[in-house]
Image (cartoon, rainbow, N blue to C red):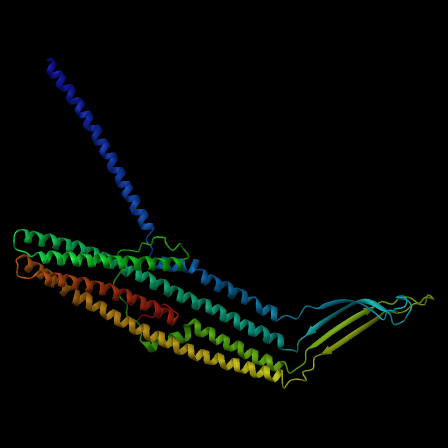
Length: 447
């Protein structure tokens, strides 16, 4: 074997080693890139805020709901306090001291000792005070439930608004790309003498309009994100990423009459007003009890010193019973009863007014949902497919100079607007559902 052959074999072996090392290097790089991509994908998936996650975070973290819970807990501690007897009073008394000597053994009437007294409201007053406070505490608890429903509704409203804006930005971005393609086609036709310069200018103008629309959508999204973060008790500038895809099927809901019946039994606001009426009735009965006297029992034990001559003197026990006399009942107790009756009547009117508002909310949300649902179906099954066919036909005709550029651009802008209207109607339908569930006071509103 000559030297050239040996040199060739050696160089070939070095080449194989180099290629092996290069293969290992690229394999490692590829695996690293794949791991980074997976990590980035996993990280982005964790940051996606679903509607369910948003509502759960709001219920856990919203400070306004938390303060209402704290208020309800505070009011729950009141019935026990107002339904208990007043604290007894302990006293120390020195009676009938002779002021000339202050000698406690000088006079038979001198007494020194402790006393105790207890105020006792007329029977039934404490129970009525406790009942009124219990009804108010229950009303406060119902108000927490009411606030929770509207918090969920507000979160859903803003979440769906962001969802719409995300899709609007995607549509605008796609149309910007398409208009740039139109500009390129128009410029090519102009360069070969088959197009007009005004077509290029028109396309650039529409592209600028889309850029302006994009800026408006981005600004609206930042505002909505700030609102959502505030409801979730987060920093208002914290980024929010929503799912890109979601089921577009809208449910069928119950009739207005059925929803009225549900709300009458499940709406927390109405239940709260019923509890307020019960509290007002208890206060009426309590005001009537004030026609009767309250009592106060007392006892005093008096120690007496022996006489100066050494004669023993017995200690004395004093018992006391006193009562209030409502002699000004025509200006005090009777007026209090009138006041409480007026307050009861006020609560009944409030309940009727709230019931009218509830039915109005249900009717409006029901109508909004049905209208938006019909629009969604119309755009998805009719208008948008027809608009897409129109754009495709216009584009094909323009490329062979059978359609002018203005009509092509108009058809594309029309498609853009229809797609925006579709997603807006879809978001509005879900927002109406959020309002409807809050107005009824429960989730089960579907057929």
